[in-house]
Image 1 (cartoon, rainbow, N blue to C red):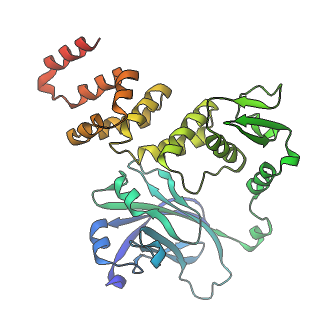
Image 2 (tube, rainbow, N blue to C red):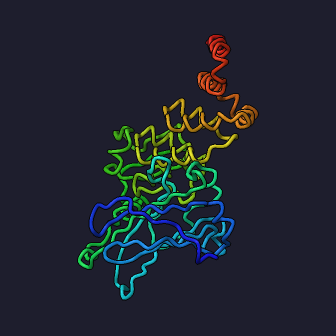
Length: 333
């Protein structure tokens, strides 16, 4: 049965003759998931890059026993006598606008823990029971392999761990962190006139993750929603745009009744418009709204951001109750 299932591959964009992007659509996501078991796959139709044929293998329940809760994706070279072909590629889940979702992207030939199924199915990225994934493939010629890929982030990460190379220290939450002034000039606005610099309004583990991102352009391997919220505020403080986008995307994809009030306060106080809109859409459901009102964060939302509750009420009242809506809004002033 697994061998008979297919996913379509269509050319999405071409930038060079050796670099192409293909969009892979898993139509009937639920049906494919019900038909296949752990270790069983769906294969794409073949596509050509750099004069070679390729396919993508998609495992809706993971390719191994330890990845049963995940989706697995693998790129496979199908051309004969092509053992020396070198390529790099990226898998990215696409959002409703056809843009890659940073938190659902990976760079590897084979990846058995690409996306946790529960997280994906709770997000808005499965539309009309269709999962859309973009595969960017670049075939590398032999002369190109003489220049190794950049490993600057590894060197900077080593410098971060090597306190002997540091010329600056921070004190955060009772802990001391060492850093290099030159690497922080573009991101952090603290005064470097005196060292150590004390930061009083941030947790030590948040600052550690922030510093790690500045040096290595990577986030913790496991980024939970609470840490994403703290990092979003920190990234906004220092205007680290890429980290803001990653954290806001994480929060937008993990909205639930227990966290939505906190996320609304966060979005209102710091001007995160995309997160605010995602929260308001979630609360458009009466059951979600009722659960939010019963949550621990509701009283904080009501006292700190009453204007947001006005927006929630304005959205859920039907158009025919416009007069009642106007009265309620006037009473709230």
